Structures are given as structure tokens and as C-alpha cells.
View (cartoon, rainbow, N blue to C red):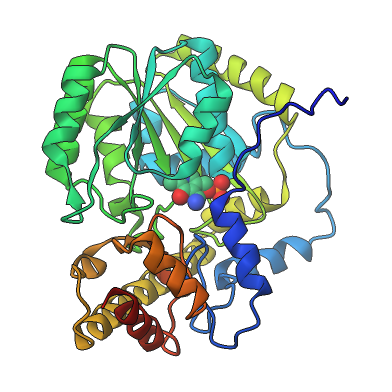
Length: 403
Ligand code: PMP
């Protein structure tokens, strides 16, 4: 008998299973509203013009080689990534330990591993609902750290449960506990705290000595405005003295999904803590990946370091966020036109690529089985799967399954 025969069986990952099912579907008008990837006006992958130009410049240079990066990663990427998320003045404000990671997932994972080894917190607080990998990561990193949830989202009203979130953190979280926040464009709900709410949340973290861990997967992609999407992180960074972590992904905002570019930042507040943190991060990363991949890191560093490319990138971000906003409006108009039962106005005000629909499992099954429209079992839709050609069909089909 195999050593591994008694492993417990886990359900296949719902999001990746749907991607495969969608690919295998031959229906000509199928619609994919499940994955968190940007799609263009024809529902195809989009290479950002800024990225295309950076690639041309990089690959035409015959000195571009395939050597290892240093253990901490691409030096210019780390420097520019810091300024991007914390703002240009961050170098004066604090001591930040940064290391390149395998995209946002790797940054979340390395951050969790670092905290588990360096602090062994009692609990990690995770929004309910959240990106599914938060639970997976923390469970695998150290199952002795309790995973607790704060009640972020009201499923009936499609709003934030702000009071309950605050009271949960105030009454139940203990000093040194970790709290995971989505920096912007909360996945899966598409709703963020307002600025006043962020201020109140930051005050609770200070009062209780909690450790904020920001997951930032959508900077610039959410609203098209890099500073606006970094507001929450910058508020905590400049207006509190909290030590905190930031997992920064370049998958969505550069369309570099398969290149796996990310950075983990640990805000330490003292030089000595920074140096010890860098030392530990290097050891943990060395034992896991030795060094991070070079290709995508070069592209991001190039775009962020070149004024023309950066300007083009900001145009690209606006292009993506405008398309998502206009699809939100088209979907809402069509749902209202069909007088679709349910509460839909939030589709327009939600931010980023996701919204919750409130659709029930049976309705979601019908959408897939009868209409070839794919969305996650939670009822989350990805707006980027909508186009001028399919949005009417999607609204009509939703209307059919709910009436
Ligand atoms: N965090 C959140 C909230 C996300 O939505 C995602 C992507 N779906 C990630 C992290 C990680 O993305 P990646 O590893 O592709 O950079």
C-alpha cells in the first residue's frame, strides 16, 4: 500500500475547474464570468501596450541574459514597487523590508510564513467572504494559528457590515493578532470601506495593537487611479505607527498573470527590525524558491522606471477600468430593462472586476447548464467577461433563471 493512499480527498479548486469546463464547452455563445482575468472587448486576453513596448525594448537588447536575480529580487523593481504603493515620500517615512515573490499569492504566502515563524500569532482575522486562497494559505502555513472571520459583507443588502466588523475586531481580536485587509477592490464583493471607515478601522488596529496585513492585488486596476487605490495602505502607513505587511501583486494591473510578479513589504519602523526582517525573509525565500523569476520583474521595473512607458501604463489602466465601468452600466441597464427580480443597483457602484449577484446555487447551475454562462458557486461574477456582444444575453438569461 502506498504511503500516500490515506491522504484526504479535497474538492478540486472551483475556479480552475470552471475554467476547464468553459474551455471544453463548444456552444458558440458561451460566456465566462468566472475567472479574475481581464478580458478585452471581444472577451480575449489583452496585452497592455505599455507591456508590449517594454518587452520590445528589453528583448532587443542583446545584453539581456538569463542569470539569477539576487535573493531579495530585482533591485529596481523593489524600489519602484515601494514608491508605487506607499507613495514617493515613503523612503523618508519608515523602514520597509521588501522582497520579490511569486506574484500576490507568493507574497501572501511568504508573509504568512514569516508571521508564523517570527511571531506565531494566536489568530488571523479574515473577511467573510474573501479570496479563497487566504484560508488555504494560512491553513497550510500553520494550522495552529486560528483562522477567524470578521463579518464584512451583508448578503441581503449588498453592503458592508461596518458596525459588526468594528465590534468583532474590538471585542474579539487580541493584541498581536493579524488582520487581513483587501487594500482596494475587495474580492469577491467589489465593495471597499469608505475613507472614514478605513480611519475607524485603523484606529481599532492601533488601540488593540493588531497587525494589519494588506493584500493589494488591484492597484490602478480598480479605479484607474494609482493613488486612490493605495489610499487605505497609505493611511495606515503615514497616519499610524503600526507595523504592517503588504502583499503586492502585478498580475492584474500589468496583465502579467502567468509571469508571477509580486512583492512582499514588511513595514518595520526601525532599522534594526528591518535588517533582521530582511534576513529572515531571505532565508525563508531561499529555502522555498532560491530566487524569484526574472522575466516579468524586468518588465514591471522597466515600465515603472521610464516616464513614457509609465504614462502609457496609466492610460492602459484607465482603459481597463473604463471598460469595466461601462460594462457594469450596460449590465445594470439590461437587468432593469428585463425587470429582473432582485437587487442590482450595487452592480454599478461596486469597484474592480467582481460583484456578488445573490444568485442561488440552483440558478447558477441553470445558467451553466442551459445558457452556457459560467460563474462561481458563490454567485460572484467577473465583469471583464462581459462584452457589447454578450451583455444582453447574460441579462436575459439571469432574468430567466430568477423569474
Ligand atoms: N489577492 C487577491 C484578493 C486576489 O484577488 C488575487 C488574485 N485573484 C491575488 C491576491 C493573487 O493574485 P496573483 O497571485 O495572481 O498575483
